[in-house]
Length: 472
Image (tube, rainbow, N blue to C red; front, side, top):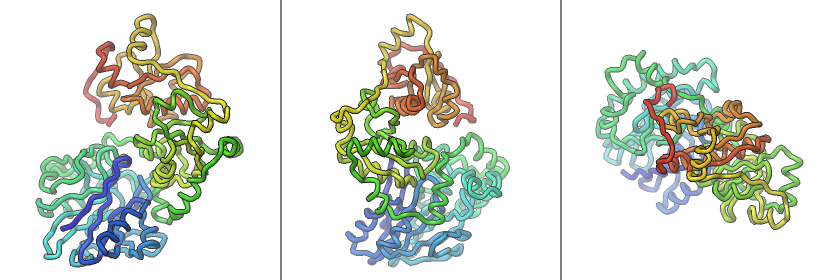
């Protein structure tokens, strides 16, 4: 059976494309839909259906643009209430894609409308299950997201539904089925996802903690809820966009890719509440940047960090990017619902410098310089990695101030003191410093290479211990 997984690593997302006998279907598409349309065109096929496993929280789906551009029909599972035309399928309903069959299996738990799709080939043989956020490789979907949209859906209720769905709908299926999940490692939709993006259901029954048949319902609920940290604030906003509808990505790209001169850029920045996001590499950014801009590098988990650090998806944004990558930046912003980019600095940061505009910098030290400083005096070190990373091992002298909880972490910073800031490799520390510097904090020094470099140097005392589950 032809099943193509289309994996986007920066948001750890998997969409799926199937095609048979001139008909195609897309499962959980990203917002930029042209690649799916191109695949169907290459196969001389018509996209018949867009199957959604649930209303997604971590990205804006491309289902509405696929309706407009390809004439597809949207399919949701039972109980879904979209604000636009769509098929709300019945449990066990079967849809035909060419000679393939797609069977609806309602699996509430991650959300109430969550649905798994069983794929059958042209001979009626069961091939695999597209599980959305119901079942991941090594994990299951967190059951606390829907309550941020519907208060009555407590995480305990949803975890109970998920237990029943897994035991009664998923685990009785054949061990030979291939599991096709919606996310992999790095997604905030689970807590223990594997780097593998497919597996057999039989192997998952053996190794996935959530499929342990010995777990009682009460034990399952406790296990699944232990260690969950609050989801990024943009999650419920993305859910509402996916439920109610959104602007075409074509309009978003047209508005966001407007080239601005240095004067125009500065004027808009001054006259609006736009946030300046500089997407260049962190090591380049520290050497010079537009005052009050924040660095979130495009070559990292860009969209996820934007969503984590900028709480309102309606926030106006101005972009500084390497030349030729402006469209990529606007697209990746749109993937997570940030549609209000007002334009980018034409010619990149060089244009700003050539115009004689004011610039800012971030001081940095390498591991040798830091070691020398620590020999001569006591210093304050902030480790901005996640609590689980810090809990695993950290510099003896460092205090944890996670970037993903920036507002709480800021409370640990005294404006009158000097701090040395590090993360794992140098990406997050510069993000952290740029945000605080834009808020008036000046005595922050970046540690190049982060914890990985410090550890490898052998010049620092490292403490490690078993990380409590509450830090996961």
